[in-house]
Image (cartoon, rainbow, N blue to C red; front, side, top):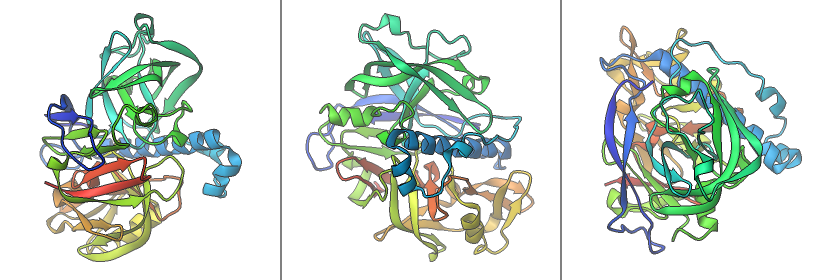
Length: 411
C-alpha cells in the first residue's frame, strides 16, 4: 500500500537529564517512508486500505491472545470480561488481490557481535523484535540474521509466529543477542529469527519489526527492546519520542528532542495494565463540536489508520452531512469538497488532524474516504486506535516511568 517514496532521516539519541533536551551529535539514521492509502492522482487505494485494516485487526487480536498467555486467564478476565481468546485465533481474513502492508516509518538497527544491520519498522502497537533468519529460504530481498556469526547469540526454547488477516504469515526460532538502536545497546535481548515468511512480506521495504509496546503483549513473553534498555540502565530517561512527517522524522530514544516541539509535553496516564499505550478521558471533536466522549485511545505508530468499533464509527460519520458507506471497500466516505476538521482532546489541549491526513482520496464522484475506519479491536466500543494519521500532527512521547503518553505541538 505504498505508492510513493521519500527519504527521511531519523535521529536516535540519549538525553542526559530529566528535562526534555537536545543532545548534539545524535546518530542520524536514514528512514524510508512507503506511501499512503492514496494513489498519486488523488484517488483512494481501496484494496490497500482493506489490507491495512486486516493487518491492524489481526495484530490486536494476537496482542490479546499474548496478554492472556502472559498474565493468566484470571487477570485477563478482569481486564476483558467475557472475551474468549480461543475464538479470536480462528477468524479468517478476506482474500485480496493486493496484500501490501500499511504505512511504515523504518530505520536501522543492529543485532549480534559483530553487528548485523537491519531496516525495521518501529511499532508502538506490538512488543516483539523479529527479523529474517539465514535459515529462511522464502525471505527474499531482505537482510538475514545469522546467529552462528554472532558471538553473543544464544538459542532459546520456544517458537515465534504471526499471522495477519490477509493470510500473510511469518514464523521462526527464538534467540537472545545484543541489539543496538541509535547508539543504545541492550544485551540478551529476546528476538525471533524468522525461518518462514509468506510472499507478502517480500514486498515490504522493512526487513523486520521492532515492537515498542509493553511486555504484557509480547508473544515471546519477554521485555521488548526499550523496556530492556530501561531495566539495564542504558538510557538516561525512560522515554522515547516520535516525530512523524514527510521530512525530518525522528525517533529519540532515552528522552525527547525539544527542538522538534513547542511548549511542554501534555502527559496522560495509561488506563490499563494491558501492554498497550492506551490512555483515557478522551473526546473526539468534529468541526469543533464533541461527537464522542469518555473514550480510550491506543496510540499505535505501526498503522496509518484510525479505527474504532462499527457502532462508534457509524455514529461519528452520521454527524457529517453527505457521508455514506462504500460497500466495495468497506469504508466510510464524505463529500470531497467538505473535508471535516477532526481533533482529539484528553482534558487539556485540543489536537487537530490536518485535513490532508484525514482525507484518503476520492472513491467515486464527489465521495472521499475518511481515515477513521471500522476496526474490530475486540475491545469495548469506547476504545479507539490512533495511528500515523494522528501522530503526524503532534510530537508524541511514551514514558515508562510515568506510565503515560504525552503530546506537544510540532515546532
